[in-house]
Image (cartoon, rainbow, N blue to C red; front, side, top):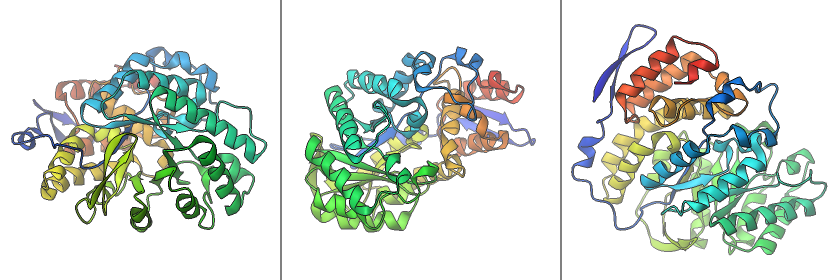
Length: 405
């Protein structure tokens, strides 16, 4: 179905929920995944959260959020992503982990594990279930406990950044000690997560003085790879080249340049294994991306084209997706979740577009309008009539009620 959507400036854009059909005509699923790709999924909130007086300036406590989540819709979002061929990245930044904390994260991990998803899931292991750490030993104990919890649920743990290290001015040797002790206590496989300062201001200077490289080299049998969310294309290419001889991988978290990073510069050189699943190894990045929460439908088709060796179609589909990613993750990048929830709501995937602490209010109306325009170009939408109805509803309202169908 095709509909025209009038924009506030008088222009009209075409919403075509059949825009991917011509790519699917000759589509044959690949025998095995060409890349390991995890989509980081967001949270859906119950509509009565509109009456809760939380805000980015006056945030709620983690214990207050468990009853505010629309759990059935939240899980349906994950099931949809899995049905499109993706693993799930759970209880990480896209799920507002820093805001909702362990009470919500632990339930997310258990519920996602219970889904028995065909492509598995990774989940963030941090320290937010424990008392405020006072030492490096406290960090190691807390992270190890969450690693155990994630494994019991069936997930692959990824070690989240530990703010205590930057807050206390930890040295490179301290980082190597902490991550090394986690490796020795928990065993493998594990992944590392290097989240850039654009996602959290307290991460300035994380992994100082080559500590990241030292950890991955010294404990290569445990840390099988890392997610890089630094939005630094050249740094990622150099890092993955250094890891490849040890059969370690980079999962790109670069929501600005992911298409070229995933495509890489050549075909798989050999096959490895991670978490019981085949893992192609070569001059390319795998992926763990928040933007795939929004672009799952076109990205699924693009990855199947890549698996057939059709790089032209891959980039034809992914280039506009990347342009959408650059917009959603534009500075201040920390507010990218607002665009993800808004697009999912417009497409009928959830009953509202609210976020924890009503962070959806941190993006301007102009930002959302541009996101819709770019999403249409990226062939994201699957229900054109719903998009038009909800966009018109949103356009004529203000405040929290604008984000509720």
